[in-house]
Length: 502
Ligand code: C2O
Image 1 (cartoon, rainbow, N blue to C red):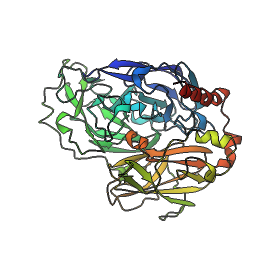
Image 2: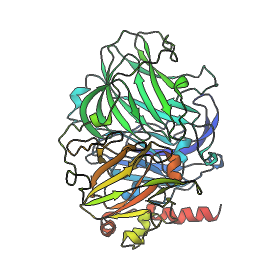
Image 3: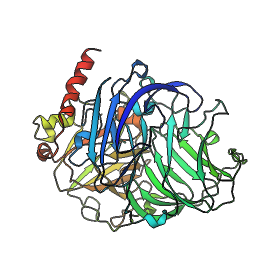
Image 4: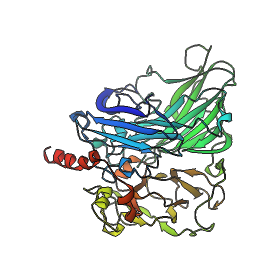
């Protein structure tokens, strides 16, 4: 892992995490990228150096620190053409921001085209030495991070219209159907009798994963940076971009147990259960070998799957706005359809196309009103200090779609698969899965963070196909509160120059 003050070189390398060799775009040359660790309140100084070459097809880059609010540092948020121009080859940019008041399980990924699907993704953990919930897991360690990823046998610029993953990986290891069966699987080491906090991070470009550990229950204690009331489960479905902390007690006989992650592509209902990805929970003292249980014939039946409406914040919380549907200051409905002529997603009739000038730069250059900002039809202005309710009807083609809001987390007052509202103690998170037909999802948040914030489907292929809008929050105050350094100002001239010469 690397600390809060680090250099992150981005370069191309051929890797074969599932036994199939392909070129990749990686942070520090590994998949997933190194875990970045910091403490609550730290200043993070992450120098991203672009060393990419032609093998990647996408030569520029930009990194998003997923889940961090970036208050007053909107220019460090990362999404290309929303808050910055991409970094070009042989240049670097230092993301320099603080994380006041935030702790928990986050991640980072490229936010340039579909580049993170080529490998540029990893976990980001912010610890809180004074965590009020520490008693639930401090008997042992908090060092285990488990990333769940999809993996492809082609570069993202060569992806078909409906990409499907070739394998799924746990901590960067896995196998693909028909591939070599001797590829090693990830090992999670435990000692009998101790309790662990596992940080579970979906770094997926597309599928959701159903995660479980044979013979072990899990207690959910954190969801995307918010501590929750302990909830005992034996499996959970985690969507692209979501995170959980679970406490697992190594209380079973000393042995090896399957860790399972069954991927379900949103695009195609491919059933991956007969070659779901596997890792090994290894008890100290057990033989160094895979579990003897045949993983394909002994699939445990879940008794206590995670239900989103059973998650409640540990600390008392206040949902912004009045406790009735449509009871926020600003109520927005986002209808999502697929336009089969253009093969793009449209949100309220408009497919998001990245503008050539980043939205933040448009604002800093003098745009005063959200309606003056490009791309037309994709920018929603929000005034400061307002409660906002967003409703996203379920059932859009290619779903379920996990949607993510930058710059905020939000209360999920109505979850997919549940028609009742919870205005009391709903889960707070930053990615929520909108459901299938008939499931409408409603979220609430307060506007307290000036700047343009991306809101999009976290199935990265869908984002690139237009499933996004930008909330231009408190535009009149952006200039006074968000002051990018000179290096940020230089990104666009350098990018435009690079494009002109290539
Ligand atoms: Cu994790 Cu806009 O992304």
